Length: 323
Image (tube, rainbow, N blue to C red; front, side, top):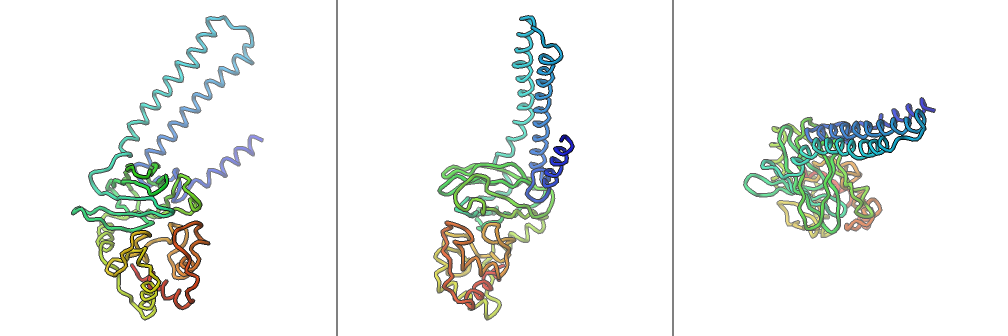
């Protein structure tokens, strides 16, 4: 039975890898969190072990009546003094580590608002302007980025396990988090607070880039949308305008200036679609547009299944070309 339990535990630990694992850190803050986990776990094991030894001693080794003075010393020393010292040491170790991760940084700053059920992301430029994107966060390596977090309507929670801790996002109240990524790659984030019907479908990709690649990307991201590059994409732009998509979505450089839904100016360059649930392909774009409510329950965007297959393909081609 012990061997089976051990093998089962090892098989479970084998799943603790990948881009959404707290045990696979890719940044300074995630490494601090992992260190904190192991120290806290070690402290808990030590406390459990010592109390277990005392229990076995008084029930199996010396199961006799104990002098009152010994009993009081055991209760006060083992039940009060030792736990207070151990927990105090763990708190002294952990609290200074957590404070810097909850403060807005003086360098790069990104404003993130949790919507139902997607993420509004705005990068603050040195001149004060903001470049708005959605459902994806991009960060440079070797630089600490401050995240200013807020929420619309209900409480959410922001969490990228491979990069740092998690923080609640509360309507009308700003909370703060900061990341110092160290390894380029794509890491998955997730809303970690139940927020409604599509809570489990509210994910996002975090793309960590070299500083040079990040500077090139943010410059491109601040530009207007690309013009349609084919006859089909041009037709898709006409469908986009005809169906009133610009009433909810912004495509910079066009008349579409809606603020209700995600900014689509560079949607085609994102790693995923629908807040991390689909791939960014023309087929998935067509399917998501036509059956939005089926794919993402209770989302505000209606499905456009009344469009012809030709119009859907053209609209998908237009959006995929917005890079």
